[in-house]
Amino acid sequence: MDLLIDFIPALAFYAAYKLYDFYVATGVLIAVSLVMLMVSWLRTRQLRKSQMFVAASAVVFGGLTLWLHDPEFLKLKLSLIYGVFSLVLLGSQFIGKRVMMARLGESSIRLPENIWRRVNLSWAIFFALCAGLNLFIARNYSDAVWVNFKLYGFSLMIFAFILLHAPFLGKYLSDEQPNREAP
Image (cartoon, rainbow, N blue to C red; front, side, top):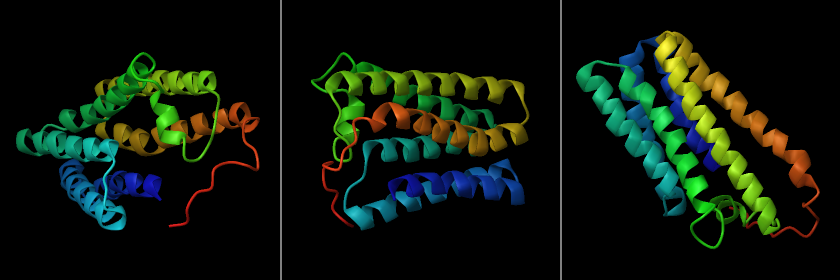
């Protein structure tokens, strides 16, 4: 459910861009990001740090885009988010008892610590590459290409990256995984 909530602002931005323009879409992104924070809060009575960071980034960079009438600010937001995710994951390789991916995934899957470290490092590298790719596309292609790649390209890349983990992690899954409480 959280993944769907996280994806709604991007879908709303894309739809508004296709129907109107970059600036209307930016306003929609800001509004929907804040609404999704409220929905998440009402649903669970808590907010994830990553969710708050993404919404705050939308407000700051989207606000700069609208105020200065320059889409480059919003385009940079995605690289900032991917870059911060990469740095947090990479930093957790050296700081703390458990890597970030182990802390995030512990309720759904149990893995040996060395496997969590590999998964964590692979996601750190993946997000760093996504940050760089976003900068490249934002700087070298039109707004329309960037918007389409933002929705389709990165979504497919993330989905494919998750699927690439399945064979590697599948041998660690068993019928005795932790029970997840039904919502």
